[in-house]
Length: 530
Image 1 (cartoon, rainbow, N blue to C red):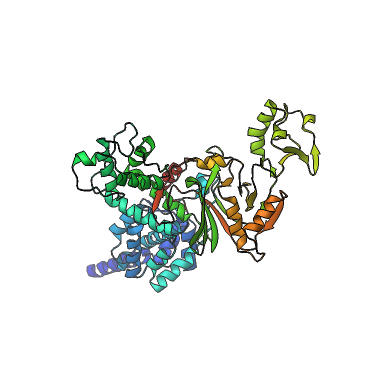
Image 2 (tube, rainbow, N blue to C red):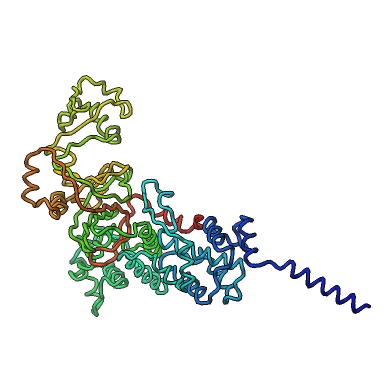
């Protein structure tokens, strides 16, 4: 009888244990319904995507193949090469707990899915939402069907391929990745040599700091120091000056070969700061549209340059003037629609408030001197009838319009790509500004150093047989003339403080708008929810 009771007790215990066993799909369903979005202290960030994904598959686990799991873990390990932090994708936790398929619990299945969704999204469109840290930065509206992408990747055992497919393919991105790897490798060596401050040194000078300069440029492969006694190497020779000029060009400095304060500052920039700047601009590359367009114009605000590109080849390059730090040129992409020869200039509200009205109050002839008229539609208003002392941009009922001519602020031509910021590209009557190294000098629009060349380039490929002579003849009339653009040309206004030039070489520029730090801080924070 005693044995019978024992058997009944064991049987009941086993039944209770079986009754308490939860199917993996049920465990996943309960976790999703709980909405805690944490697993063992790890935050799950795909708060919308994960419930949708598992709902579609009846809450069944997804990661049932060793190769798929191994590929994901390897891609997470490698993501530092793209300037992203592997720990954002649960790397340490997954490596500790996931050994093979049999070790993947329902909760680990969810974490693997979260890692995949985050990694794929960040590599495609960036970890940081650009507009949340800078309202004047409009990033592209890229999308990805995460459920469909992961389902296909798991079915075909192509997890690594699916992740690599979303990475940017631009040369700038690939070269910045290469530069980041080189800088990370340099960190394992001794710190690069610093150059002491002092008076400006020029070719022919003899100074101990020339030895420091040679060592610094050799460290980053700008120059190879020859075998010679220090007495010779102390002299600033032409070969060294040539290397300095190349360094200056790549860092947005005047290439004069002089070792002054600005050049020493750039040479002494820390390796950590180079890594930081490279990482920030890798993120900015991920904000770009997947396709820049077969034919497009790129304005890099930070480098004050424009590049016209067709079929991957740079067709035209020119210097530009961009917005002042307190009137920043915004970042966005739009289609070029038309250009206007001999344009009128209608004074925008910001310039009216901050520039024109204060000047008119000081000088009643200011408008006449610049050939600016007060207009209401087509009616010209006598400026002497206006009480300028009480006039503000908000209560001014008219428009100020400058006629075409030599003093016109827009010069001979403007290029329009309609946008919410009323920003466009144009000629200028202040051509002396292009001699400046720092050309953040406009009120937000982009001034072109070669506006006629741009017009000829844009129109030369049309069916209307435009050439330089025809452009010249239109300009000589001084009459307002609009030409619609009949082919697709995208205009991308970008802000890169690290980028690749036409020779495939990485360049760096000053952060003129102080935009880098906000991106860096956002990259160091937890990812936003998906």
